[in-house]
Image (cartoon, rainbow, N blue to C red):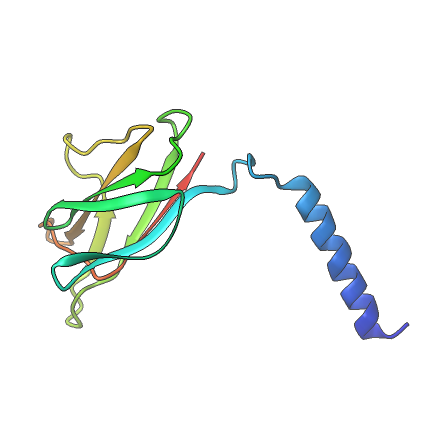
Length: 130
């Protein structure tokens, strides 16, 4: 048996072991994710899993609705935003105001500049874990 075929067999075995250990209910598997942005005065939804819609309520303020509700509100979300300009102005994805909500049906995500003003982004990536 050649080295290449041994490595391939090992990779197959590792894949089977991982598949047997990590199921859809595993807490390390994302429950929802989305790649979207605000481009040309509209929301552009590039790719998503378990996301029904993204709506914009104001500059830099978005509501992400889930297809299948979360089991409770104790989930964790992480988001990153791309700068919309090439001048070094960074964008941050945050929950900033007490009006921002996190329910089983949706999560509000705010995009702001480092100067703390609301700002849209051409690309925001959100991942939800539970």
